[in-house]
Amino acid sequence: MILLIIINIVVWGLLHFLISYLCFIIPLHIFLKDLSIFKISRFEKKTQIWQRIFLVKRWKDHILDGSMIVNKSFDKRVLKGKNINVIMHFSAETKRAELTHWLLIPPAFLFFLWNPVWAGWINVLYAVFANVPFIIVQRYNRGRIERMISRVDV
Image (cartoon, rainbow, N blue to C red; front, top):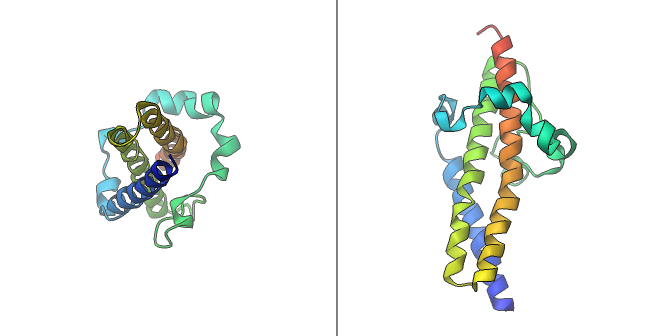
């Protein structure tokens, strides 16, 4: 049982590192595009759903940012300027972070290969609970950023 726990921790560590690295090396210009998978819906913007349902403002500043771990990554905790280029870069980095966290969920199903079914489901729950808060924060921030961009004269 202890060996299984160690294996799961090591595999998760490797998955986090590998997927994060692969997303980190995707050129920024890919995330500057308006890809439909990252589009913030009118419903999300108008109703501020993330704040209303999940009270994001209360806890978003308490979760880790990738820049705390990798020095070369973009620090999304604070917007560093109101220049349109900075704002667009910030928006692109929220897309990169969102993609990273979405991609960290599906590999959880691989854990059924060497774990008992109940432990496989624990790993799936871990993947969801460890990544969905980050996805919510990225979508919440990007909705706010898009409102800022719409106010800036480009």
